[in-house]
Length: 236
Image (cartoon, rainbow, N blue to C red; front, side):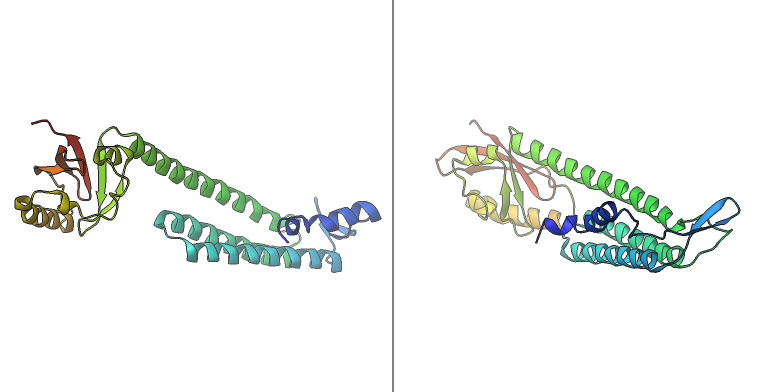
């Protein structure tokens, strides 16, 4: 069905050109002061109802996207869009079915589209910023010449940048225990030091130890932050 369903709203437009009559809106108008208002007939009310149903479908899709979202930043953007869409739908219902002749201009419901357009621009700017931020982080992480390991709260390696994989001469460093790479006499000390600083959300500084790669080379490990390890080559 996709993407043909996207073009379904064009069918009435095509019929309008073929039949040379407006089947989407009223063809009779009344003038009140400087404003010219359409007559509420079957064509007008049908078009308004179908448009509101599509609007309600958009809200449901946004709620579904919010339910599946796993990032708080995306959730905030989606909530903003949902509340804006609900407000615009209420505006459309009030000013689309009720004519306040002489008080509001004709087709007052269309002004809700301007609010929705502004909300979409804000959402796209925020999402583009988030994407750019993640992309910049990924570039710095992958191209960093220093080996970087990301550890979880138990000290297991969650991620390693290409420099770390090159340094360890293996791509199977992920999911390994970092403590297994340390000398036995340093393991207990490192575990206590790491656990204390990780749960306290303190910077993990002033701890250096030799570790050995699978190729037998010694490197110097310098710990930084609460969940990252930066490794540099060590020369005795």
